[in-house]
Image (tube, rainbow, N blue to C red):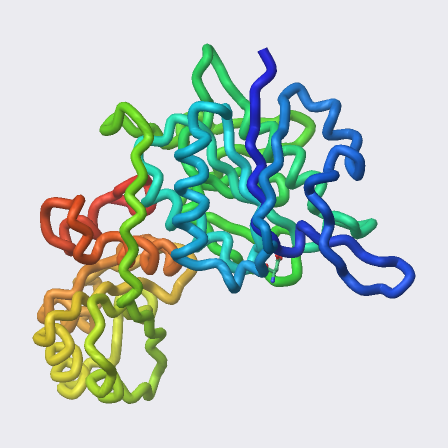
Length: 338
Ligand code: ASP
């Protein structure tokens, strides 16, 4: 039986080709992908293409598009064996993280990919990313999908989507998952690290929870920063502070007073690290005591992208019991180490 993969094309560099006469980039028609890339016909699965009416640069993708994709997957869930989302690279980790929270009980693969060079460029990385993603999206064993989570495939690596970040605007190897091992790697053979794959036993079928609250703010702390400007901001529901190392901040009275005042206004404060790998460990240094005093939440080893989308998904979401701090601290779908 041929597996069926639904390819949802949203935009980004991958969907462009170069006009070699003028040198400019123009949109590549994914509806004609089989004519432009006849090698696709050699794949052992069937690929169906659904392009966004207007392809978007991923800086224009946000909660509204995340919801559209989540619902489109839900509507087509029974018709296809795997889902592939072609996406601009700039915000792909945000979309992957948001989708991982919205799609509950996934038992089929959802793979996001894109490229650093357009698909119509001679030196493109798009073809390998596309073809291998299709392979992973159609990978089944004993009638069960091997990948049952939202992932990013990029430059020979399959990664858990909500653990990723884009760390290079230059190299083909643009994504990393510093706090979680690779799920699969393609070389001469296409490998899967089965022990690292996520399995959800809490849901018997796919459920969409598209609740999103945009009242979330993210601040990177820097030496000499004037925190008192925070108190002049309109009230927000969640403030994510990206602090130094394993969770430190300048330890003066003013800092404590300002953060306490923000907490007293009912704002949840989540603390994440400026370091790409490792995470927050309250109590390791005295300069993290301030966070324990004000009841801030440790983001542990979560990425900034995942922390932001998780906060948007959780704050005041009626489908969750328990308080925000408890829910933020636990793993919803493998995005944080417990
Ligand atoms: N600006 C593009 C985007 O994110 C970059 C890319 O696709 O690589 O849509």
